[in-house]
Image 1: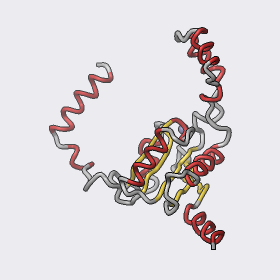
Image 2 (image 1 turned 180 degrees about the horizontal axis):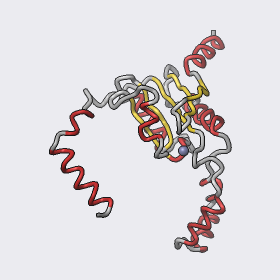
Image 3 (image 1 turned 135 degrees about the horizontal axis):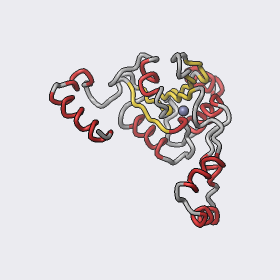
Length: 197
Ligand SMILES: [Zn+2]
């Protein structure tokens, strides 16, 4: 049986047997008032929240490849803004992880793969002349903690993110779930308050 058929068959039983009951939450608002940006890595599907004692209903989770905030007006920031203004999140966690596929992406290899799978030289030429630097766009990051700090910089300096939102940075070990603290948002707020005093 192919995957989609398998999924649909399982889903029928899941609903019939009321398996959903254990996942039901009070409402759409995150109970712990937190939104997290993390990586789409399969190892983090459950580990990213379970290792922090965050369950369904506690947290909004936004994911992409590498937990990278590449554009200050892209969909990630928009999701954070929605979480903060409409879903009452007042803390943001950016969580990168060690051994991430977006660290040192081999863009030459990736482009070669595209070419082998049918993307034509003409397409690459058009992109180049449209001012799109494909290698730069596909490149992830060199060092995960720096990448998390870069994300945080974009968030805390964003004109649409309220200044009373705490922004924390973590890096998780995808094997053990141990997190290293990269940025304590409470300290930043405290330091900012001192600077303005
Ligand atoms: Zn990753």
